[in-house]
Length: 603
Image 1: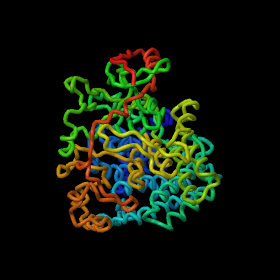
Image 2: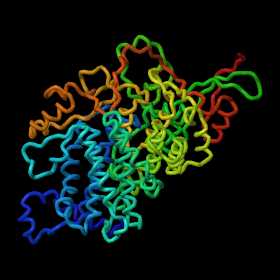
Image 3: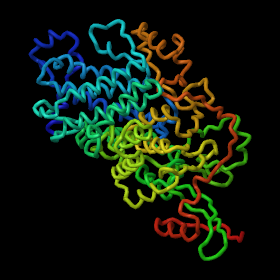
Image 4: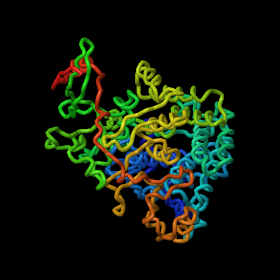
């Protein structure tokens, strides 16, 4: 979207587009107002508001500020907060009302057939977030003037079925040859000659994604959807330029939401840091993305670890200290009562204090890369080529279609992700050959700092696909990371020991979001029906959360983490620069840090 188009966009945003449903006749006779907004204008506003709200962070309190925590990518707030956070109001009023206007004003006009279907694709995407967030939601009766006092909620299954139906209808209705009926400006795919084809591919790939997510609750219906889209892979996202993403530019008001929050607004609070879970998984498999997803800690602030290494020229062992470039902040820094006796006298690396058994604790953690935060033009990824390849791998490995092997799709997904981040092929290929990454191998991971959970990848190549999907969702798709974990439980995650629910000693990731209080107040009949769909006793949603699981999720019982045997495990820190004194010293020379030998001895 160039600057001229953006100025048009800003002008249209200043109009209260959602008011078109109120006093519609007066609007049409008011000479000071636009008679009609174009589909392009309405959809552009809807898409940009979606991107801004999904990507909104920090003080803006959007989805990602909490989802980064829940997806275990990083820490920006320090708790698993699964409240509404404005999702309901913003999605239904500020985003979906615009799309409703497109359908109302242009739905029966054959001149706008393609553009109406594109709007419906975006509607399906937005509803897929709402359903994955809350479960039961209004869909058919939402934003409908025929339903003002009582709005019924769809069950989770019904909502997903209707979303899949919207996507299928849209993908088969769009006439890609009718280039007169396309968006004059498109903030997702631009104005290329393949705009219509790309929207069809996005619709089909999103349909594949949702059907794979819902195999547990939709069963044969989901499998039929997967087989259907996999029979025509040419109609799925198949290259990087077909990635669905919300575009931004270096114009005030239209910058990337991370940039607006953390850079332009002079943000002074806590910048997002790598989580110890992300650290554990990246370190376990020598993943070079650690240096691309996150900035290293400034040399002066790095934690000096104590390590034991051998030598290539003699049989001595060396106890050395050196600074490590990365570390992740823990969610379990508040120790549970059951852990305290076991940890007494140990050295806590997460204790940011100089008075820690004579050893400084970690006081600085790896921050999200400034290439992510300090880039006003960085697009917000919605559904990438890499993700599409991993989705195809899932379908193929479950015998639901595909022209290639699951391994080929999987490797293509890793290649696409590494290419997106600009990581050299030499590092990529070395990583892909490692145990736990290469198909047919077993992944034995490191433990977190309390020896509470580890980064093992469960047996079965599909779990490698899930693991790579989770890594690919960083940083723009933490909501999808949350859905993936609920769907698969493939990751071993530690609990939050400073839970957002005061009644809990600790908190695992939440099973769903909580409806805003306005739902029960303004639409009690609809709310009561929603709770029945969810199997939640009347008006006990607040007290039974955060463990109300949705139907697509794997049944899960939260472990009694307080009863776990723990100790301070520093193995994730050690051997950062290899196993020999020579490799450690070479790294010190290359990076400008000192290596201190505290003891030499023969075993």
